[in-house]
Length: 277
Length: 130
Image (cartoon, rainbow over all chains, first blue to last red; front, side, top):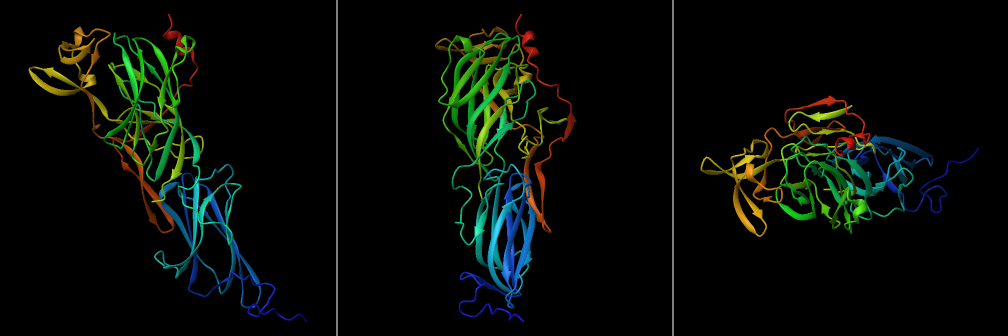
């Protein structure tokens, strides 16, 4: 007959030195923010008073919300919490698309007091967070996720206007959009503007005219320089790496725009972070 | 199938290729400062009339000129933006119901409909190069 190991005994082989004793009132609260609908799985082990290692696994879908996290509260069980690992189970998920926080809380209610924050940081399909070991990370640490976004194709006589979603922080990297001018004789000049939802705080003019009945593709990027004649169908706009907060807008302003001038859908790349606020 | 906003007629895909939702927000309307019937006022660009007087930069000068008499090289001044009536704003307003996050658009506007968008071919260039 093999004796049951005593996890409380000095030098007990199964109990880690950092283990947190948890009772009936202790729960794990898992919170996930995400810009898509990735699945996060939080796993770990609890060493029971009888010395038996118990395994738990709690899946949770991120909410496709940058502002309100999906939350799951589950009992730890009586014993020593040995380790916790958070995994993103959805393939192709980049860092900063999903952000997880795992707290040890008192009681099963959503408002339970936090006793300890065990994990906090971004997950990717092949990158995990683990307690103990992983550092606490905030949403704005490090590089953001690079996204290519197809914007709204505005109707004729409407400027392009793209709005940063709630809870996001963007750095605009590049933008391409095509303007088809109608037959009304007038030189149009396009600028890219950045505003806070109301007031413009940056303008990047193309400094090139587009006359009537022409199709021109505008390309904005940091360090853009007007090309030679061979690229006359393309017009470049130099922009600084503008950082935009939620509700800020990227828009075109077409001076001398005519009523049936028509912008196509913009395609743009941004570096995105979760604001975490 | 794409989505078309009934307010601004903009067309967009509600889900990006990266699986991230796209939240459409209607652009403002463009208004132009004009002198019409002896009164200075802003009018929507679509309502601009040939007899409206606008201020334009002509060379180094600022001139009052009727819309019908604008030269191709004139630069019409006084354009601005005004809020679009019934603007749609899909920015999600999220709340927690049970253990689920439930989101609704900030402003529904006049709603949306689904539309079929013809694929881009590049052949339309021939319409513009005679």
